[in-house]
Length: 204
Image (cartoon, rainbow, N blue to C red; front, side, top):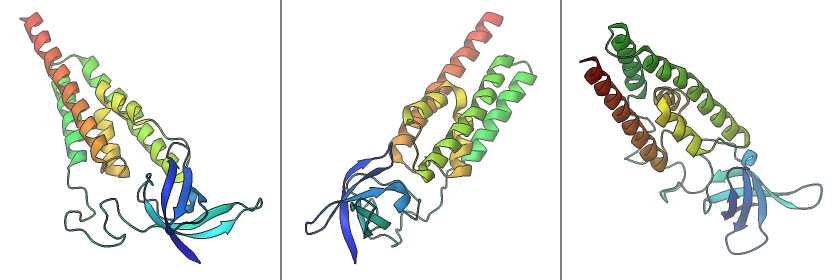
């Protein structure tokens, strides 16, 4: 018999937790692999529906898990006027234009070659880290800490992060992450502008 309950415990780093059925009853162990649809990660308090199974030791496990409610409280599967399912930010365009601009400025002698090397050199591993993190999320393995992703962006890997967000559709919807990410981008560009102006003053 299919049940509905709420995630009473959830360890996202390890990909498992417990669900307690509505109306009371024994809680069930639930693993990230029990979610057939990996459109988003579970969070504490999510309302889900599930089948109850017993493992070889007789412990209750939740299987064939699905979200009963979206994070905004709407029923899962219902359309929202504010979300057409598409990311409208031109992330690829922003990243590619920036990288092209840096390379052009370097070619014309307006900025040191190490700046272009820095952005390109950090963008490649940043894209790879995003890919590995999404793969880990899909397989229920240990995730890359968000702080590490933000530090890569702050150091200059943010063009690669934008390309990863657009191509992999990873970390492009979480509001708190995006706020921190764009703050890191602004700080990085401000630091670049300061370095460029300092270089001009020294050259003059």
